[in-house]
Image 1 (spheres, rainbow, N blue to C red):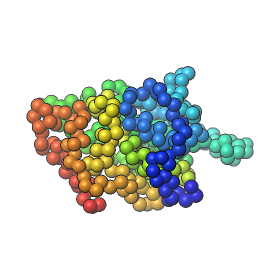
Image 2: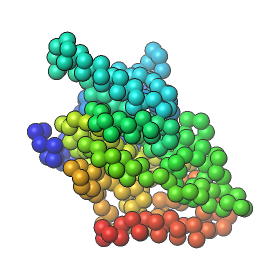
Image 3: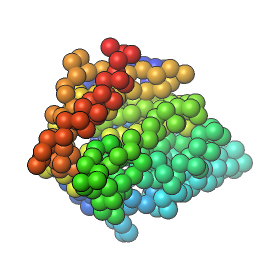
Image 4: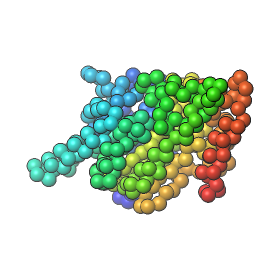
Length: 311
């Protein structure tokens, strides 16, 4: 791939066969974030060093076991991007001062959940993007603090049930704030590359990581991570729920590159949002014991308002 705008993969069978993430990870069955990372690593290869924020993926690499072929560093929730800067600086010093060959250079990749990304780690990430640090950022967004019981996060959607925002008589919606728009916040920093991806669109995901691999500077990914334990669904439904997130328009699949936002997957005919909501335990209170049409309509209206300029 010589041009960052070229499409590398056309079909699923075109994706690399080699696996960079070994089977048997201790993460939950049906984890959408793990599937997204697995597909990304097929493109990036094993020449990667990971800076992992405390969160669900902390369980992925527990000494002495590591399912990844690259190196793994575990950090606090606020520090993965700062850690990645230290790694990047060390690699650059070795290259520029001590003659380390280009073949020994590594891609530096932050792995963080929405708790670190949207909340505790946002400030150092903002500074790193502003300084044009050369790194890849992979946010597995399961829309809650999943590793500690699935509490409310800045990514939790309006109307969802979390451990710290349960539906009640005084608060029938459960979570009552709108989720933070991290795509627009990151976009305002004018990074080299920014994209949303989902495990249900593997070719789109692979092409975006292939494009990012050819670039230098901050390259940022938000991966929808359907979570069987936090969202409340059977692991076998992960891909169906990820597909409905795209088909309903709740999760726009898009990229920001060279100052322009492009939707790489536009639903031909959007499915009503309730088809996505009704499969998840975290939205069950919107349908039982009494259907809450006003809240469902509010969620639908937000989606309609987003897509109106593009339809």
